[in-house]
Amino acid sequence: MCSALRSDRRDDAGLRLTIAGTANAIRRALAEMVTRPPLASLCPADRGTAEIVLAEILNNISEHAYGGRGGPIEICLLWEEMGIACTVIDTGAGMPHGQLPRGDLRVHPDAADLSEGGYGWFLIRSLTSDLRYLRQHNRNELSFRIVLGQ
Image 1: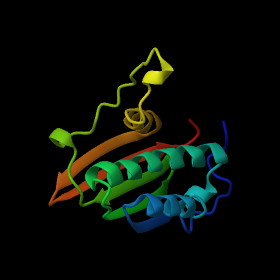
Image 2: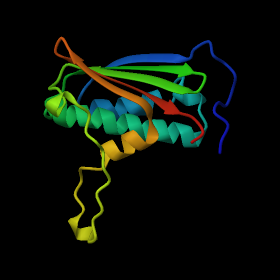
Image 3: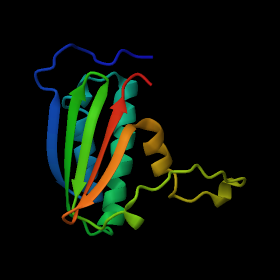
């Protein structure tokens, strides 16, 4: 297990970005986020976990909420004592039935049957805590915490 932070600096513990919900913008944003606080201060394992979770969430928004057409995505990351508090807001379509997907892990006996989709919510639920979804005023708000040192 790695130590949570490479340094004790807390003076720049938050990051707020607004990006276009396109594949290229998401790749650029992820590359930027891991080089800036609070993610840059994490050990490589925790930073990798944060990058996986954020990539899954941002790509889901791009593909499903915006249907591949893109749209604004607000991202707020804040260092807290036990992890990184995250909020992601978009104005795309809401979650089916107004609820987060369950994220059940589906077992495929034949590797040829594996599809691209279906594992993102399993990863998100496995690697986060305090996962909450709210839809109001035509906005989706997803909040969660990435627990350090898992």
